[in-house]
Length: 458
Image (cartoon, rainbow, N blue to C red; front, side):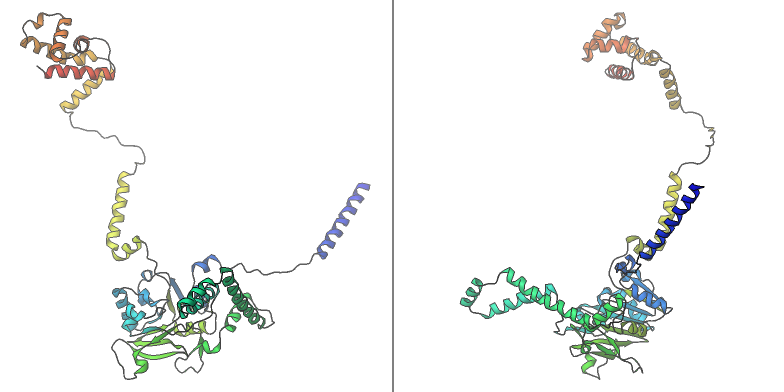
C-alpha cells in the first residue's frame, strides 16, 4: 500500500515538473535564408517558368539553340545574346519562323555586333557604345585609381615624370584610397536600406525594393505598346545604344524588316522592334532582364507577360549537345540501323539458356581427323614406341639401301656413324632411333625433331 502511494506521489510530482518546464520554455520562429535551391542555381530562368505556370503558360529553358527543336511549336522565343544565331542555316530557319507569325526577342550587348552578328546585320541594327559609366565596385575602383594616376603621369614632362616615379605612392596608399571609396559605397547602401518601409516584408521583396531604390527614375526605359496608356518601366543596360537607319530617316525602307518602335533614355535607344512579315523581332541592350535576379524588378515580369505567348522558349547559352543527340537528329535512320545491328551482335555472342541439344552429325570423319584421333589414343595410353616405330624403320631402311654395309652394323655403330655424318651427338641419335624408355612431352618432341633431321639429310 505504501509503495503504491509513493509511486502516485512521484508521478504527480513528475507531471507538475514537466508542466512547469513546458510553461517556462519560450517558443519562437526564426526564418533563415538558405539561398537558392539546386534547381534555381542550375536554371537561371526558373522564376520566369514559375510565373508562366501560374498563368497557365509554358516556358522551356535551353542552354543551347541546338536543343530547341522545331520552332513552330513556340509562340515566343527569348535569346539572351543575338550572336547565338551563328550559322546561316539557323538564321534562315529563325527568319522563316518570324515571317510566319513568330516573335523573337534578343539581347545585343556587343559593340558593333551588327557587323559580325548575322541576325542584327540582317535587320540593319547596330550596337554602339553610349559612353555611359555606371556604379563601380572594388575592382573597378582600383582600376579607376590606377587609370587616374596614369593619366596624370602622362600629362607631366619627363622631369616631372621622373619626380613622380620617385614619389610614387605605395600599394598601402592605393589600398587605403580603395577602402575609403568602398566604405562610402557601403554607407550609401545602408542609407538606402534605412529608407525601406517599417512594415515586415519578405527577404526577397526587401532585396527587390532595395535594388529599385538604387536605380534612378531617369535611368529607366519607359515602353508603351498598342493603345495601352500604361508605361512599362524596365531597367536596361545603358552602356550600349541601338541604331537603325530608319531612326534618322523616316523614308528609309528595306525588304528585311521595318522599324516600327524604339525607345530609350538620355544615353540612347535601348529597345527596338522590327516587323518582318507576320512576325516581330524585338532587340534590347540587356541580356539579363528576365533572369531570376532581375525579373522581379519594376515591370519586367509584366513586360514578359505582354511579349510572350502560351508556349515560349528561353535560350541563354551555347552548350553543344552530345554527339549522340546530333546524330539522332540528323541521321535517325543510320542510328536505328546501328542499334539493330548492335542488338543482333549481342544476341549472337550471348550465352544459351536452358539445356543444349545434341547435334547428330552424319558426315564421315576425314583421313587426317582419323590419324589425329588414333595418335591421340595411342599417346594417352602410353604407346610412344608404336608412334615412333614407323619413322624409325623408314630411316633405317633408307640408310641401308644407300650406305653399303649399314644394315650389318650394330645399333651403337649405326648411331655413331649417323651422328658423325650429320654432326650430332651420339647419345641424341641413339635415343632417337633405339631408346625404349618412356618420354615426356618435351622429350618426345625432341625425339621426333631429331628423326626428321636424319630423314631430311638422306
